[in-house]
Image (cartoon, rainbow, N blue to C red; front, top):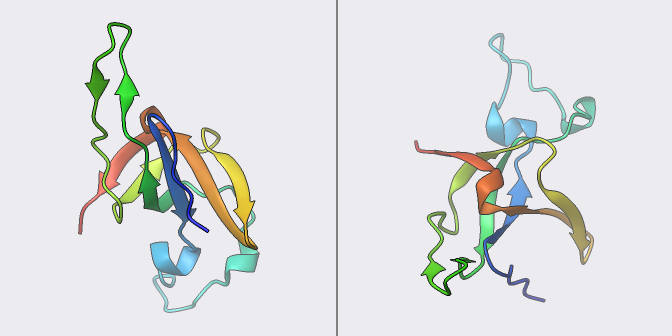
Length: 100
């Protein structure tokens, strides 16, 4: 199954604590089950076509598939597809792209 976001929406996969931080400064790996806070960092899985302005012009998306991003904590909606959890957010809910 393929999910294609509409308009200026972005499909995100939340990153686990290990993917974000790996381990603590002392080398202890903290399991994902220990963290119950809502994620704020993810990887872009799919993007919509862009935002339509009031005068009918299309503004293309500035976010690309595969980008690692920070997003507003309570901005995205949670969905579950074939047992896997995703987040759908508007492009304006994405606060920054993380470049490595």
